[in-house]
View (cartoon, rainbow, N blue to C red):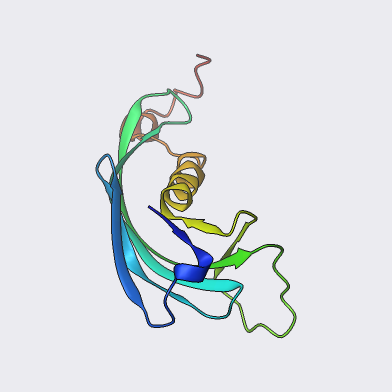
Length: 128
């Protein structure tokens, strides 16, 4: 789902998209002409890999995030932003699918250890 900055409303509007078994839902609204706020939840099951053996692990997702989308380079001067994730775009379009995919890749890049590797003390690493 893509929306041009100029078409984003000032009052919060709901959205929901999904990718495989993961849902990305919440509300979004314009803060200023150059900033959009997205309050979203990422919910569902996501496949990640064990960092020791490479086996698939199903990770249960239930994450709440606040994104600030900046139309161009973000300037933190005069902005009261602490816990939000800043996303800079240069094409005047907010792409919700791209934001979701970026968050999923970030989750996937973390280190996970499956139950088998956790309980097996003599098992260190396998190169694959």
